[in-house]
Image (tube, rainbow, N blue to C red):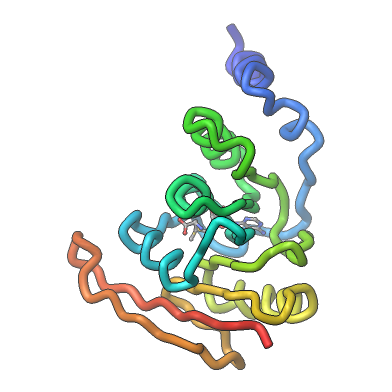
Length: 184
Ligand SMILES: C[S@@+](CC[C@H](N)C(=O)[O-])C[C@H]1O[C@@H](n2cnc3c(N)ncnc32)[C@H](O)[C@@H]1O
């Protein structure tokens, strides 16, 4: 069977076709390449933000969905990922389905610059400094006071972190820095 047809059929079986076919087309080039946060660091990000079941977590550029999945599965939160790259969207939606997290976790296929983040109580970010600069005015405009923002490695210029945590070794010899901001 033709690859595209097989993919669409698989997506339909998973209830993904609607979303896939009406997904927004983004005029924005990729703001950051895909580079996943190690799982041990994902847990530290969500712990630093004190994520709890009443939270709604948004991950900006959700990649394979690992932050969304852990926020929903281990921390009991509602979690939403925004991802531009369709294969990663399909991969993360399949993982949500497989883990039966549909009631808590979802992935928007679209441009992170064009979303509404007003429902968020926690936002997770692993992007580049230039992408943070593009997102900063959007977050400043949309986020409620008290919303926690956790950044992996690249801070937001102009914001003062409430907490900064250094992870000396992620288990694979790499160090990471996390920045927690609380929206005023
Ligand atoms: C460094 S990865 C982080 C992935 C994930 N958040 C994590 O920490 O494991 C950045 C992600 O942002 C996505 N991305 C880049 N530009 C985007 C845009 N304009 N809208 C939505 N996603 C975008 C990339 O496809 C990539 O998956």
